Image (tube, rainbow, N blue to C red; front, side, top):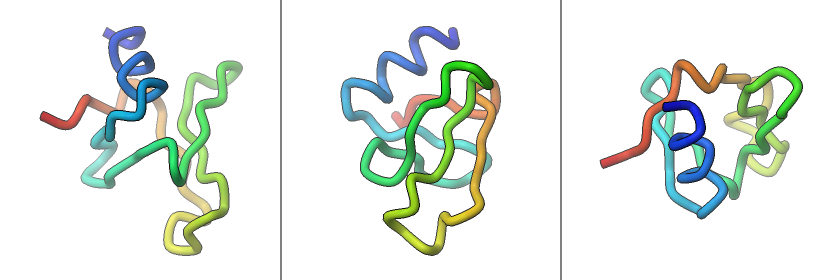
Length: 59
């Protein structure tokens, strides 16, 4: 399941993590912590970190 979610993210699909839309445009994936971390491009998401287990592919 996690691999499917990560692959979708890496291919440019949006994810839903705790009601927040997570995309490559504004987030990076950190392999060590298995989480999506804001890349700073959008101040609204500045301190956001989402565990991959909290995310699903947007349908």
